[in-house]
Image 1 (cartoon, rainbow over the protein chains, first blue to last red):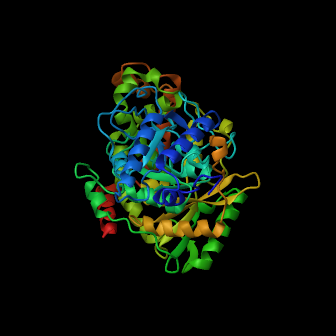
Image 2 (image 1 turned 90 degrees about the vertical axis):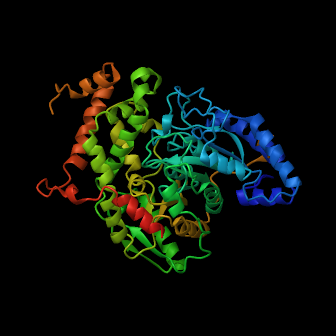
Image 3 (image 1 turned 120 degrees about the horizontal axis):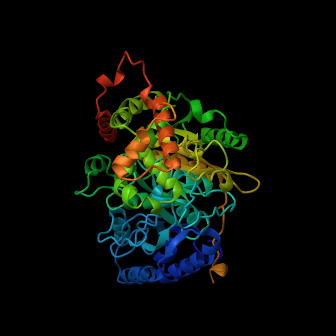
Length: 474
Length: 67
């Protein structure tokens, strides 16, 4: 507990389950905290009080009638502004969709509703999920709860700010090149980018259908995994169905890591690291050696082309989705979003298809080489600490591509390879800045990645970056 | 590619029925340079490596891994 409020979904579920707190009480406190912190964090695009309280009342009512409920029942969460809910605005962090009201609820929100979760609002994000810094020309950037002058990371910027700022205990984000992992790392929380196809993307804003993944950010690995278990799986009417079914059945993470071989990914992932990141990686490896079967260096095949391959696939597909608006409403995009979408028009079909086609050989090579002697791999999320927001606010300048590449060089490869990654904070600088590590597993083995990430969480034993407070929630 | 190449401007004018802004023009030219360096120029052209690559290898591998 933190100042009268549950510090995790697990704690909240226990309180709700024993009627020590009702969902309405917890939701009211969360809404109050969201309102109070909004001027400082700018985490929300909209706080939806009436709907949230209605859901909370329904949740309490169901529980009172003795319904069998899961761990998310009655828990107030908030989500990136890109998951359709029938009758509620879904704006994608944009001006263009700022009044769009979908008629059908997205698959992930249906699953969360079925799990009884309460949704208290739409979280800030990079416009149309394009942008690893979290800047947004229309709504302003969400603020890093650890250090306001640093970026939250993007594109799930509000999710990072809201979970890192202890406003909510969990949130949904999306990841097409690092958009869950970067905010999780910058804001000192846990993020899960699942295997490509693990979570149904129907009704979620499309950015790049080949690469988009939906996943949770939360304060603990266990909480994040509970959310992932709630949203994993496919709908029969969705194109991901085949892959989703193939990977269906998300097992619980192992209780211990004694059978797990850990590889410290080499190559570019250990070069030119900021000393604090290098030290965090070394310490994490040493810690894991105490509890895992083995920790060894894992060779990394040449992935130098992968960030650009990811960019080509993502931008070609994004430009396809935005093609009509880029003709009819170009001035309604923020400058960086507009320029990035225009890049898609400069990608010839053979280059796009070549990039898609190279996914197979690169995945095969990576599985053989990097996972040859390892069940999971570890690598930093970024080679440096979260940058100052002013230093990476490149707008539509020629420096934009370099800024984006530097931020996403360590995350894009695992997007392109379709692999599951759990991001966990492993170190804190004296000024409180967080260093995040990626725990990467073979396709569909989120359980192993989560098991090792949970071990790191226990071994590092870091306090939350911020504390929840009932007093300030008033 | 020299600075007077009109291809990017032509693409925007043709498909989006408007002129490209200077920032769009610069970004599109940068995009082409990057993907030429990292994708178009990846392999020895005499090998033509992609000729023998199964376009669905990625999906098959993901399915195989699920078993």
